[in-house]
Amino acid sequence: MNKLTISNLTKTYNNGVKALDDISLELGSGMFGLLGPNGAGKSTLMRTIATLQEADSGSILLNDIDVEKEPRRLRQVLGYLPQEFGVYPNISAQGLLDHVAVLKGITNGKERKEMVSYLLQKVNLYDKRNKNVKSFSGGMKQRVGIAQALIGSPQLIIVDEPTAGLDPGERNRFHNLLADVGEDVVVILSTHIVDDVRELCSNMAIMNNGSLVYKGSPLTVIEELNGKVWRKSIDRTELQAHMSNYQVISNKMVAGKPQLHVLSDSNPGDGFVAVDPDLEDVFFSKIHFSDTVNA
Image 1 (tube, one colour):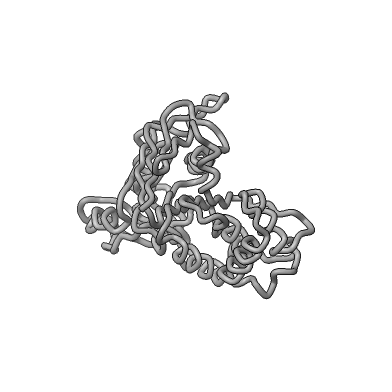
Image 2: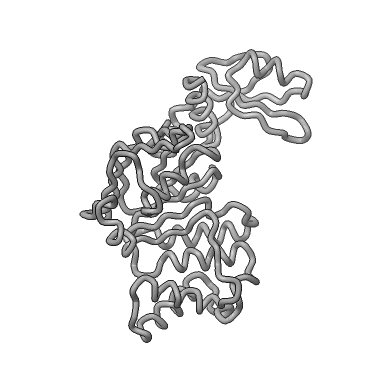
């Protein structure tokens, strides 16, 4: 059983932006979802855990590894798929994985070859192993990315916005792959896509403006909103008045008309109907509340 402990992590950039504000989390093996809008601090947290930048204060422990004091030890057991997974322009999938395996210290050629073949089969790219990665679709590149993250039997895997830009079929394949590898190691899935967390993660946190605004189970927090979310379709000319008069947590176009979800302990009337809350309602309500507090 692996364990990642993040304690009182803070980071302020030179321009005064507080990217991490006293972040504390404790994660065990399995899939953990980190939700937040762009600019919430998710990538800063992921990069700090991955030893790509230092925090101003706080600590990170992976099992018995002090990440700040022993970054090299952490890297030996880390699998990392960044938001922008760059690849060499003229290298095959097999060549890329072999190169990464060498960088991770796997010097035995036979062992390396067997590992690369196994991972290519695991991500369903073995038949494309000799093709240049630059010719791959976005989803195929992401599968190569998760394959390289699995090299060396990692104890911690970080994937940052892994399904952004993927078509539905590739997204489903990537979900299945993540679920398969996430049983025995700590996997952090950082994303702004609510469905990724709903479909994959039993535990999660929501970040906004560098702070944690929720941590716990998706199911538990959804239950907290039961009976408090109301829906109404309106004309676009009515939008401004409704935004002023109600606690609107989301506004999206459905069949050409704005559809509002509002948060209210009782029926707000005026044509609103009760709706079963989902994780998207949770996400928007937590972000809306934290923005209101910080305004």
